[in-house]
Image 1 (cartoon, rainbow, N blue to C red):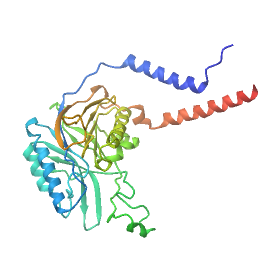
Image 2: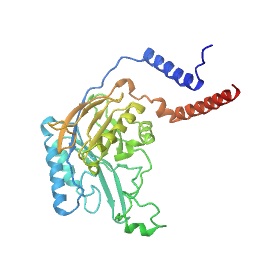
Image 3: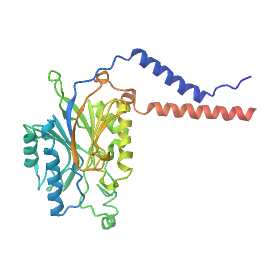
Length: 333
């Protein structure tokens, strides 16, 4: 008599086969949205904050952005902490950024900082600049801060830690998914919305999930991987964005200070990445790409977006139950 197939194997395979069959039976034909011209900028800014480096970083950012003028992007993406001076604060360069956006005739979506000196608060976030009306008052604040990079845990209880970690002020933690405007190539459809994420926030599935629940049509990750050098770090980080695209069925746009920059479609396919003439993602430059959405997922929430990690929990229960059953059977043989 042949051996029976274990229950922990039957149930997951059955769910996968039934789900795949249902999808391919009901799936409509793919329909892509009209392309949107998006400019990606990699200024390759250093992390030195002396005056000479500040001027050089700003000059690189402005030069690479202006190099996109002929390609006529509808919106331009800047990476995390794109300017060494906060866009909101005591030393704001808001007017210069607004003038550049107006000069380019393109909206701007950028990673940057806000500083409120009276309150002693920093925000690491993503900001939107309309080419006509200027900087939007609403912006996204990073929700998952880096310990000892953006804040010192237990600062008040363990004040001696400040001697080892040179952070003057902690960043404020964001509490909600904020959507920012994104242009639509279809003038009759009105605007669309992008769910921003800062740096390693694309590692956390629930953050992307909450952005899509709020109504995001796109996901945008502004990051700075220059700390990792030019090895595997940026590639490994970008791989997480593939998972977020598949989980939410939303295309992901990424702008990195030195790379990885590009876009990923709803199926997790890396459609285009920004590379230099030698094929490297690590370089100073800029490029405009045509990006589009799969309209089959327009306004659609995936099971993960609706229900979260219930499937993982369900599989865990089945695995434990099946394992215990097999152990009991083994003891009776």
